[in-house]
Length: 218
Image (cartoon, rainbow, N blue to C red; front, side, top):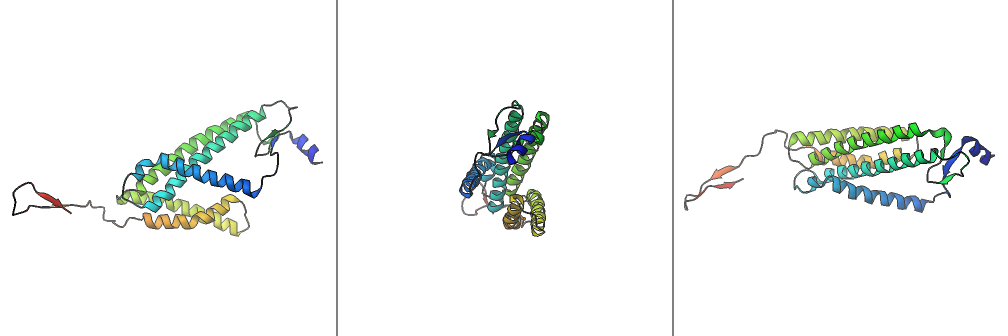
């Protein structure tokens, strides 16, 4: 019955074997490492400064790399699904991590999905990269912008937590709950302490003993 149901749906791809917890744990660890490396590469100027909130900068850096890695994986998945959908109807199902059938979409759908992921992914990477640079700054306005982005993320994480409390399950809801304390801590450390907005000035002192140029002291 199961085989006939798959045949009626036109199954074109499915996992060869059910993946265990160790496999998914290795995938998550590799994904986090890739996100960290990609985030550092994309936000390197923010780490060359010695100002701002280091913790908030680290959280936003990991998010930037995570969006880049996940976007790349989704594009690869969409392109691979595009290729599998074009296979002949009598071809045996291919081995893949995701189950795919003819009723899940066509070539036009996956081409639109690829374009959408690329556009939204680039915009989100740019937004998070700018927020990372602002979190590493001492300017109050830039820190407020970074805090506003972190505030939006906190609101999203709280929403996922509420939905999980009402019975929704899945890794997006669990991820939102796990990330909530980190986002709150990043928001607290990123909040600017100097809210006056006035630039710091330096007093000029001239030594009365020895002639020469004036020395600048903070």
